[in-house]
Amino acid sequence: MNYRAVAYLLFLVPMLAMLAAVGCDKASPVAPSGSILAVSANPTRIPLNGSSTITIIGRKPDGNPLNPGTEIHLSASLGTIPSIVTTNGSGTATATFQSNGRLGTARISAAIGTAPAGGGSTGTSDTPPPSTPTSASIDVQVGSVTTTIILQPTPTTLPNTGGDVSLLAVLRDDSGQPIANQGVNFTTDLGTLNSRGNTVTTNSSGVARDTLRLTAQDLANNASSVTVTVHATGAAGAAVTQTATIHIQGDRPVASFTFQKGSTPQEVLFIDTSTAPGPLTYSWNFGDTTNGAGATVTHLYPAASTYTVVLTVTDAAGLSDTATAQVTVPVTAQGNGS
Image: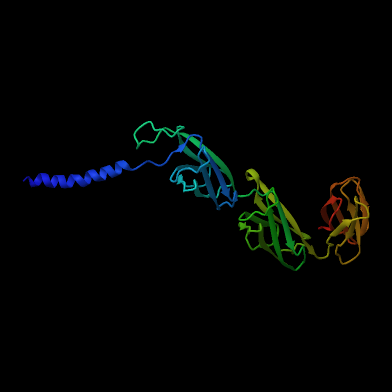
């Protein structure tokens, strides 16, 4: 007996079995021609370094789900997403889109190959048929564009010995929603900021905070006011800013006023709230080319609109200060000028 031939046969038999098993493996399922993809994202607006769950639902022309294991190819115009996912038993696949800190709109695209109608094959059972792509896409907004900033200092008036002022900035987008995780910078023409001018990030309510510290030495030159500004990035990288004024009490007066609706829709009542160690004279510019005088005045506007109102107060020594407010007529709520 030829033992060498027997050993060779014993080795060859399992090898042939393995090759046969490999030859029986089937390629990934291919969707039939006319299949439809639907893509959704949750959420559709994310922070600069946020993520969104992308869901893809595939249906055959007859409305049934795509076969399990059907490959769906994904791409994103910015950020990252897995390049291939496969459907489950309900024809659904999911992936996580991750932004990379770039502001913009990410176009998420999904595509599958489709088999000829009827599902016929042009080659062996192991060769997938030619395919044409079926695709769908959705946009995810990465980061929010700042359109408005509200800046509120507290308090708005300090003695000439100085003190601390809390600064609160609220950022909102074009739909009026707060912008979270947005960087802003505070600046001041006097004093020291806790942030030292470095970037402060808004919280989930779109709020960023800083503190301004003013000393008597900062105000030694008899400054009547200090201007604080907050800066953010808007559309196309343009700067969006808002300023606020902190008045310094000293020998000079500090102007301020309130306003409210008068007895008719276009009438506005202005009330002086200025502070000074002595008597003041008052000069009002109502923003419609007319002027007035007095601590409390009523003005009738010619039309519904928004007007810039300026109050100038002057003391006996000739020192003066001004307060300004944007007044929208008809007035619906009390406002302040500072």
